[in-house]
Length: 109
Length: 115
Image 1 (cartoon, rainbow over the protein chains, first blue to last red):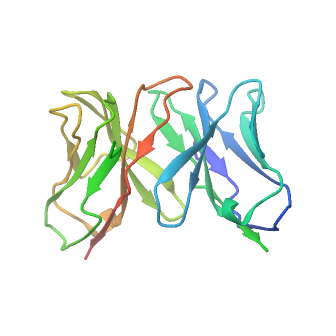
Image 2 (image 1 turned 90 degrees about the vertical axis):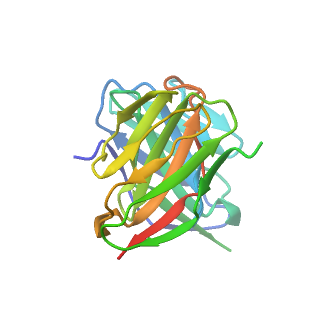
């Protein structure tokens, strides 16, 4: 079983739609959780950290469920510019970061 | 600030050749790491360093060496290139190793093909 698993997608949604991604992790001792965004042929960039109580940044909401060991990302009112691959990241046993394979999102006009 | 820089951007090697991928950061970050990204696999950690003179192995270290003589530089050496090392390589740095503030800043990547 992979340490961090994501639905690869692709998710194809119209502009204005709400879309949600889930990510499961296997290390119950993990303490740090992130969502990164990666555009085609570019480097990953931090989208948002995920806090225990959940957190929101504009149209983006992240949630953490420790009991079920998953994190989620909700994007409201999707824009064309949201098209990208979204990477779930969880810290491993040595505090190194473990990346999911990513979920590809395409927002269409 | 330039952030994290990597050279070269593209490289083609023949099997058995050696080369060094360069990585530098100007943010005074202690933590630096090297990842490879393959289709459907996500980013996998090759080696990392928590400070000058200190390095450790990640998830897929075989066939790669690193050293950290300064805070700024963290080169990755391929000892004898193999086709399985064809990949996109990313260098990253962060302020800390743990906690919610360890955002990793990535370089633009090196696309390596081994024939």
